Every structure is written in C-alpha cells, then in structure tokens.
Image (cartoon, rainbow, N blue to C red; front, side, top):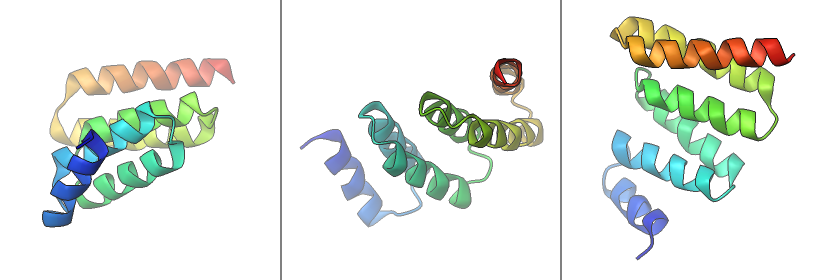
Length: 105
C-alpha cells in the first residue's frame, strides 16, 4: 500500500487526525498535486488552526506554484498561529519567507 492510500485509510477512520492530514498534504505536494495538497492543508487548518507547520508548508506549496499573494496570506496566518502557541522557531522561519516574498515583489 502506498503512502497516500495508507493516509487516506487512516483519515477514513479518523477524519480529524492532524498527523495523517498533514502527511497527506505533504505527499500530494511532493507529487506536484498542488490543488489536492492545498485542499488537505485547508482541511487541516480548519480542524486544527494552531497546527503551525501546516501554514508554513502550505505557503511553500503556494510559492512553488507561483502563487505568492496566497503564500503571503498563509504566512501571515501562520505567524499569528506561531505567536499564539509560542513557537518562536516557526515564527522566525515564516517571517523570513514572508520577507523574501515581499522583497521579490
């Protein structure tokens, strides 16, 4: 069984499993399936608004697809999440990426 099938099986049994949802989004992103990846990231963040890594990886997926305005929005949301949860490392990484995207425009 491949990773996507395995993760979908986990999610069929536990639709709010954050780790499986994040893993599925990452698998789709790695396979170049941007829309499917973003759908999964969206579901993840709707169910778990403080799953900070989801914002960062969604932003990276968007930036890779050339969708910088959307990437900046996700980063802004992620920075707010990182502040709420006290995740200074993630906050720094997302701020650096946001600054880079702002500079590129």
